[in-house]
Amino acid sequence: MWLIAAVFFFIPQGLAVAELSSRFPKEGGIYFWTKRALGEGHGFLCGWCYWINNVLYYPNLLISAAVIATFIFGKSESGLSDSWAYVLPMTLGALWIAVLINIVGVGTGKWLQNAGSVGTYVPGLILILLGAYGAMTAPAATELSLATLKPDLNNLPALNLLASIAFAFAGLELASTMGDEVENPRRNLPRSIFISAPLIAIAYVLGTAAVLWRLPNKDVNVVSGFLQAIKAGADKISPMLGWVAALCAAFYTIGNLGSVGAWLIGPARVAFVIGLDRYFPKAFGAVHPRWHTPVMAIISQGLCAMVLTLTPFLELLVYIGFSLTLFSVLSVGSLFVFRHTRPGWQRLRPVDFAWPVIPAAYIVMGLVMMIYGVFLHPIAALTAFATVGAGALVYHFGVKPRK
Image 1 (cartoon, rainbow, N blue to C red):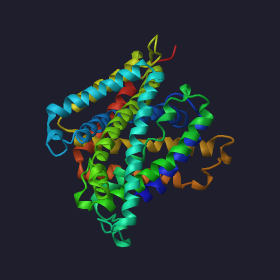
Image 2: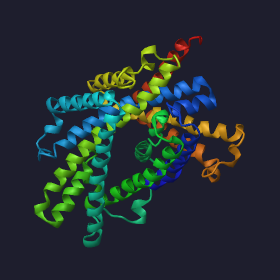
Image 3: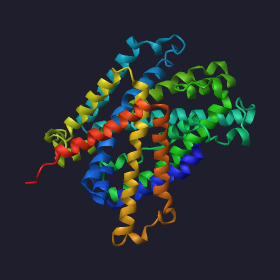
Image 4: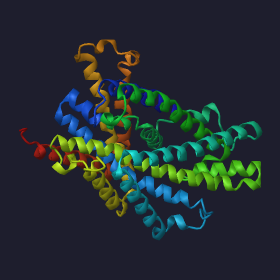
């Protein structure tokens, strides 16, 4: 399933984003590309759904970090992760730490993102190494054969898995939302994609294989499964290595905090540019006089995420996000329009071979997400449609004549 999503979603996404970010390294990224190719209405809806989708993402990311943090102190089996007296303060505290750090500026906020990347890759590397050691010394805990590895696409749970994997692979466009603030963006934005994309794919595919080698798939916890596998692998080597899982939990908690910082600062630039284009209130297009950051855009995301964290429908937020991710096809639609209507685009470099695979793959994967939401989570799907409708209303009433 990871390989299917990589070939038909992740690789086309990377090629499209690399091409667009090198040609149009502008603030707002995906919003700017879509607006330029398909017009302001399409651009606004794309930016609106991208912004809302990411706001929905913060609560689940931070709650999972709070759950994982219980492993640090050996409290994973104590029931602490089920206590809102613990989870809620941890989640809201981490959220506002990330908000405040990013308000102070990119020069400060980048250290949170850098720490987050280290906190993500270190546990991933340890997991893969333990999986490799297990492959050389012990049989697989999960049956791995051609029959068991072959995806079953005839049932909706399989579609759920494919949608989840595609959702995990989304995000290569994030850095381009800060195109005007990146040094030499025409070179560095595509370079960042070509460096990071293989590492991301390897970490996901080999990490999943390592978990399944160490644990029976029926025993894997949806949130902390990778830590279960790390603990099992370390214990197999020596009981003295029980601290490895706690260390990885600490790194992963930092990694999630860094992820929230990154997903705060990028979409805030989309809201900032929409504010400059007068569809959001004027305050969204203002920057702090000292730190030069879009304060209102960042704070509004924090406030929305805080309210969503307090709702009893957190699980639905993920599936609403799946549905809204469908609008990422517009960024590839932008490339498709440019490819056939702009002089000089007939000689696209790395994406020539991919036509018409790029738009088709994106659309199919997006429809998978939407179908899953409609059939298994109708409330989430209806909410997603309502969100798009609300965006259309904001656009309609937000249009103001230029001076």
